[in-house]
Image (cartoon, rainbow over all chains, first blue to last red; front, side):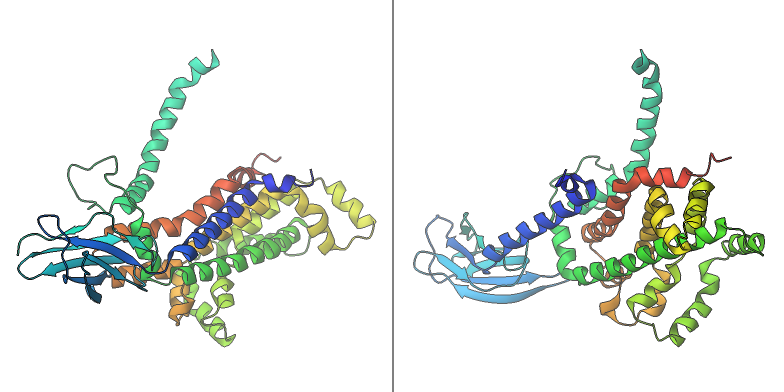
Length: 124
Length: 270
């Protein structure tokens, strides 16, 4: 009886929404470092060193470059501290080929993104 | 036996409901897929649905700020409506000289569209120094004649002996309204809350006239601004529509029982 107000439909609905919003924000707080990691491989599947990787932001209207980096000896690359939620990633290396730009959409700004599938350069 | 007899009616009602809900479903589906609404043949089921258009809207405009503005204005309107309309409705249940004329005045004022009075309302609000403020946005909706009559009908359904007994005990009128009569008219209060909330939530013209600062805009103004800034974002536009619609729908669904009781209370009286 004392806690029966908790079963009120208004309390359940709005309280539930508040709890969900709180949990979602908690999840964001632990996953918004703005880290993007991945690997670039050539047409033969071998890691490509020194490939240029460009990170662009896709707004509702245009795409703007926001960062670039080069892959290491194992073909890996990393961006830190981005505050974007709709991005393009593009990779290229002369004489080897290019990848993308491919769009990735994130659930919130700065969401960590670990690309499990390598970016495979193709064409030249 | 009863179920067998009623199934054609239920089937017909279900079909009508489905037809009426179809536009809402279409808005929801488009907000999740972003597909062109003119595509032919139209797909009934969503293909590859995702929530990213909602994310786009959240970051494309200061949605949270607009939401807070709408909530503050609606809260002011709802509280003022319940408070002021209850007092006005109670007054109309009492006998006083000119009561019939007052009721006629109220009823005739209902026929004047708000667009006609918007310039005087603007001038009065400006004189009070309330332009570009929450209170100024809420002011014209703080008491509505329809809701006054809903309270009046509910109060008249309460036995007069109850009020007379309170009066004999020396209870003042304001206490009779808020301590004795209003607790007995919860459906009328729910109706007031829902109607006031929906009118305030969807109000566009008045905030458009008196709000100067982008930070003070409400959700309908934000939707208009979103339309003017962004042209080719069907999915984001529909997602925004859903985000504007949901609070009103939730409030209505939660209180629909009281809402319907409130609207029909007094209808069978006498």
